[in-house]
Length: 347
Ligand code: SF4
Ligand code: SF4
Image 1 (tube, rainbow, N blue to C red):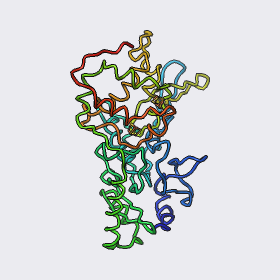
Image 2 (cartoon, protein in one colour):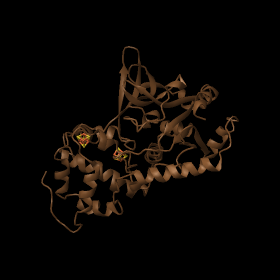
Image 3 (tube, protein in one colour):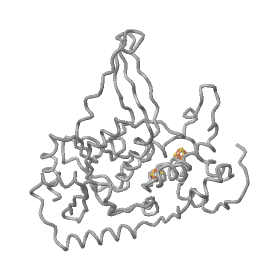
Image 4 (cartoon, helix red, strand yellow):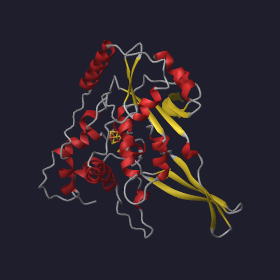
């Protein structure tokens, strides 16, 4: 099937926005493609995760008209009914969509924009044959060949792909590809071998069992000073994390033309302004509290709220932190904390 990706695009490109990994200015990025020859499937992982397809860095939520004082009309978006194919994503990033959905669908106020786009998207993912040293998906309930979060799952067998429909959506889409050939027993066997090899090649094994039970009573532990000492608060670890969902909302008001736009932009708990109150009080005043919040959010609050960890083990925060503040060593230090210890930090 390798040379048939173009065929797939030609068949589906008119009906769907077709997002896939391509090279742009030396980086691998997920973009709506116009030429299937640009698709690169033999990649490690994109710097910016594909979360930006459903949750862009900057997004106009809606536009409005005013009479100079009051809003007189909300102009709803028309693009939310568009259908998307998200092609070539890795299992960790596909699982991150599930975690994002937990957040955007939680509570009384559901995020209809995110959820509509998610509903209208078909995920065609590809197994991760060569995990890197920074990957640890198997420590966070994942696997380099995990297919449950995809609609169609591909395995790169070298000269061709093994294609498997996982969901109803995936089965319906595969019916539109009559040119696919039946897989042989040898193909299935080779895919199983690649899966095993990929799993065995993951060197990082973290013990995350019950980590929330260690974190919860140790909010004031001195370890937070230690793990934040080298952090420069750049926010890279959360901006590029596929499961981070924090955002800010601003109104871009054009008073001369009596109209405006409400815009959502990515934000991060690693910035001091993020938690600054209008009163001037900031509950996360120092880097110590902000670093602690990132870890507690993923490994304590997230399991408490959604009964699963808030990290998919993609390794981006390890790879891209400019000062090498390595999440793996932070977790190892946390696991060594004596739960009963009653030391306190002095920020
Ligand atoms: S990427 Fe590193 S330096 Fe930047 S905020 Fe995260 S831990 Fe701190
Ligand atoms: S915390 Fe780090 S390893 Fe975990 S999902 Fe986010 S970027 Fe990936």
